[in-house]
Length: 218
Image (cartoon, rainbow, N blue to C red; front, side, top):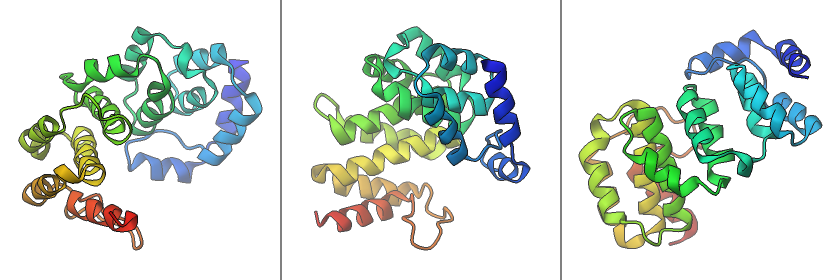
């Protein structure tokens, strides 16, 4: 079955899509809409998902994340998978589609948050951002802002992006911390000059916060 699926993914490979993805650090060339269509046909198959992940191929791993049962992975298994997931899209889908739905999400958030590997730490920050937005009780929001203020400016790209998203989410979701979040963003100027297409919101925290607050009328 794995060989058949791998052959199907190879047939869907598009050099133009791969060229675009490679500019973002990814190494797959399958249209994601077509990948989702394959996943819809295969439905949930946990063992196949594990075997596809084990191939190390990014398209296969993305497909695996679409057909797996998130709650079926153990804590240590997810930790190993996260440390193997070096490509941005695979890393993003693993965190958002699988880890966030896992009963081990909070334990892994705490384990990854201060990991010396910035890619792993970025996953901890992504899980923290999710809690900031949905279940902030027990989080030290002021303390998170302290860390962002001290570390974000010089953080590696993936970790910096995750910290910036957390900073922006605190400012958007928690009015009592909004002024400080905006001030930190303005002073650090992280992503201030990020190229943003017309009609899209800039990831620069002060602009992002202002736009989302405006939309909500908050």
